[in-house]
Image (cartoon, rainbow, N blue to C red; front, side):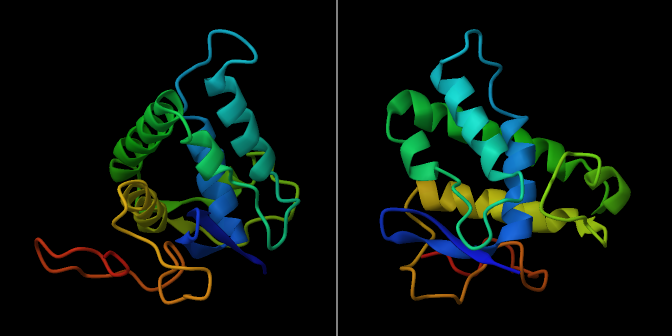
Length: 163
Protein backbone atom coordinates (compact mmCIF):
# COMPACT_ATOMS: atom_id res chain seq x y z
CA UNK A 1 0.00 0.00 0.00
CA UNK A 2 1.60 3.26 -1.14
CA UNK A 3 1.33 6.77 0.19
CA UNK A 4 1.49 10.10 -1.61
CA UNK A 5 2.35 13.59 -0.39
CA UNK A 6 -0.53 15.82 -1.48
CA UNK A 7 0.37 19.45 -1.27
CA UNK A 8 1.06 22.90 -2.51
CA UNK A 9 4.76 23.75 -2.55
CA UNK A 10 6.34 22.23 0.53
CA UNK A 11 3.11 22.25 2.59
CA UNK A 12 0.74 19.34 2.56
CA UNK A 13 0.03 15.98 4.09
CA UNK A 14 0.56 12.31 3.35
CA UNK A 15 -2.35 10.11 2.30
CA UNK A 16 -2.80 6.45 1.53
CA UNK A 17 -3.03 6.07 -2.22
CA UNK A 18 -6.30 4.10 -2.22
CA UNK A 19 -8.24 6.71 -0.24
CA UNK A 20 -6.68 9.56 -2.25
CA UNK A 21 -7.67 7.85 -5.50
CA UNK A 22 -11.24 7.37 -4.27
CA UNK A 23 -11.38 11.02 -3.17
CA UNK A 24 -10.09 12.20 -6.56
CA UNK A 25 -12.59 10.03 -8.45
CA UNK A 26 -15.49 11.53 -6.51
CA UNK A 27 -13.98 15.02 -6.73
CA UNK A 28 -13.69 14.79 -10.52
CA UNK A 29 -17.42 14.15 -10.67
CA UNK A 30 -18.04 17.42 -8.83
CA UNK A 31 -16.03 19.69 -11.14
CA UNK A 32 -18.29 22.17 -12.88
CA UNK A 33 -19.26 20.57 -16.19
CA UNK A 34 -16.86 21.79 -18.86
CA UNK A 35 -18.60 23.36 -21.83
CA UNK A 36 -15.72 22.78 -24.21
CA UNK A 37 -12.92 20.26 -24.44
CA UNK A 38 -9.58 21.75 -23.58
CA UNK A 39 -11.07 24.09 -20.98
CA UNK A 40 -9.48 24.43 -17.55
CA UNK A 41 -12.39 22.51 -15.97
CA UNK A 42 -11.91 19.66 -18.47
CA UNK A 43 -8.15 19.63 -17.81
CA UNK A 44 -8.61 19.46 -14.03
CA UNK A 45 -11.28 16.75 -14.33
CA UNK A 46 -9.15 14.70 -16.73
CA UNK A 47 -6.12 14.94 -14.42
CA UNK A 48 -8.14 13.74 -11.43
CA UNK A 49 -9.72 10.90 -13.39
CA UNK A 50 -6.28 9.75 -14.57
CA UNK A 51 -4.79 10.09 -11.07
CA UNK A 52 -7.65 8.07 -9.59
CA UNK A 53 -7.21 5.04 -11.88
CA UNK A 54 -4.96 3.10 -9.51
CA UNK A 55 -1.74 3.10 -11.56
CA UNK A 56 0.43 5.33 -9.40
CA UNK A 57 1.61 3.54 -6.27
CA UNK A 58 3.38 6.04 -4.04
CA UNK A 59 3.09 8.99 -6.40
CA UNK A 60 -0.56 9.73 -7.25
CA UNK A 61 -0.38 12.84 -9.50
CA UNK A 62 -3.25 14.76 -7.91
CA UNK A 63 -2.10 18.03 -9.50
CA UNK A 64 -3.57 20.31 -6.84
CA UNK A 65 -0.84 22.92 -7.06
CA UNK A 66 -1.23 23.25 -10.83
CA UNK A 67 -5.03 23.23 -10.62
CA UNK A 68 -5.16 26.19 -8.22
CA UNK A 69 -2.40 28.19 -9.90
CA UNK A 70 -4.94 30.65 -11.35
CA UNK A 71 -7.95 32.34 -9.75
CA UNK A 72 -10.22 30.42 -12.15
CA UNK A 73 -8.62 27.11 -11.18
CA UNK A 74 -8.80 27.92 -7.47
CA UNK A 75 -12.51 28.70 -7.85
CA UNK A 76 -13.15 25.45 -9.76
CA UNK A 77 -11.27 23.33 -7.21
CA UNK A 78 -12.92 24.93 -4.19
CA UNK A 79 -16.32 24.63 -5.84
CA UNK A 80 -15.79 20.92 -6.50
CA UNK A 81 -14.63 20.30 -2.92
CA UNK A 82 -17.57 22.19 -1.40
CA UNK A 83 -20.02 20.38 -3.69
CA UNK A 84 -18.58 16.98 -2.81
CA UNK A 85 -18.56 17.78 0.92
CA UNK A 86 -22.24 18.74 0.79
CA UNK A 87 -23.04 15.43 -0.88
CA UNK A 88 -20.89 13.39 1.50
CA UNK A 89 -22.44 14.99 4.57
CA UNK A 90 -25.84 13.68 3.47
CA UNK A 91 -24.53 10.27 2.37
CA UNK A 92 -24.86 7.04 4.34
CA UNK A 93 -22.21 6.48 7.05
CA UNK A 94 -20.59 3.71 4.94
CA UNK A 95 -20.08 3.52 1.19
CA UNK A 96 -20.51 -0.01 -0.12
CA UNK A 97 -17.41 -1.76 -1.46
CA UNK A 98 -19.59 -3.35 -4.12
CA UNK A 99 -20.66 0.01 -5.50
CA UNK A 100 -17.14 1.48 -5.20
CA UNK A 101 -15.79 -1.41 -7.26
CA UNK A 102 -18.08 -0.35 -10.14
CA UNK A 103 -16.24 2.97 -10.51
CA UNK A 104 -13.46 1.82 -12.85
CA UNK A 105 -10.42 1.55 -10.60
CA UNK A 106 -7.71 -0.61 -12.16
CA UNK A 107 -5.27 -0.91 -9.26
CA UNK A 108 -7.30 -3.42 -7.26
CA UNK A 109 -10.66 -3.88 -5.64
CA UNK A 110 -12.06 -2.45 -2.45
CA UNK A 111 -12.44 -5.30 0.01
CA UNK A 112 -14.27 -3.31 2.69
CA UNK A 113 -16.86 -0.57 2.87
CA UNK A 114 -15.47 2.95 3.28
CA UNK A 115 -16.60 5.12 6.15
CA UNK A 116 -17.93 8.39 4.73
CA UNK A 117 -16.34 10.51 7.49
CA UNK A 118 -12.94 9.64 6.02
CA UNK A 119 -13.77 11.42 2.77
CA UNK A 120 -15.26 14.37 4.65
CA UNK A 121 -12.02 14.68 6.64
CA UNK A 122 -10.03 14.73 3.38
CA UNK A 123 -12.23 17.47 1.92
CA UNK A 124 -11.87 19.59 5.03
CA UNK A 125 -8.09 19.03 4.99
CA UNK A 126 -7.84 20.10 1.35
CA UNK A 127 -9.83 23.27 2.04
CA UNK A 128 -7.57 23.93 5.03
CA UNK A 129 -4.51 23.42 2.84
CA UNK A 130 -5.86 25.88 0.26
CA UNK A 131 -6.46 28.39 3.05
CA UNK A 132 -2.95 27.89 4.49
CA UNK A 133 -4.30 26.41 7.73
CA UNK A 134 -3.33 22.76 7.22
CA UNK A 135 -0.18 21.06 6.18
CA UNK A 136 3.41 20.51 7.08
CA UNK A 137 6.47 19.47 5.14
CA UNK A 138 7.01 16.08 3.52
CA UNK A 139 8.93 14.82 6.56
CA UNK A 140 5.83 15.12 8.80
CA UNK A 141 3.47 12.14 8.79
CA UNK A 142 1.56 13.09 11.94
CA UNK A 143 -1.61 14.05 10.01
CA UNK A 144 -2.90 11.72 7.29
CA UNK A 145 -6.50 12.74 6.51
CA UNK A 146 -8.93 9.90 6.07
CA UNK A 147 -6.43 7.33 7.30
CA UNK A 148 -6.62 7.29 11.07
CA UNK A 149 -9.27 6.92 13.71
CA UNK A 150 -12.33 9.15 13.63
CA UNK A 151 -11.63 12.28 15.62
CA UNK A 152 -14.13 13.56 18.12
CA UNK A 153 -13.37 17.27 17.99
CA UNK A 154 -14.53 19.59 20.72
CA UNK A 155 -17.03 22.20 19.50
CA UNK A 156 -15.15 25.09 17.91
CA UNK A 157 -11.81 23.28 17.96
CA UNK A 158 -9.74 23.02 14.79
CA UNK A 159 -9.26 19.47 13.51
CA UNK A 160 -5.99 17.75 14.32
CA UNK A 161 -3.23 18.76 11.93
CA UNK A 162 -4.55 22.30 11.46
CA UNK A 163 -2.28 25.23 12.22
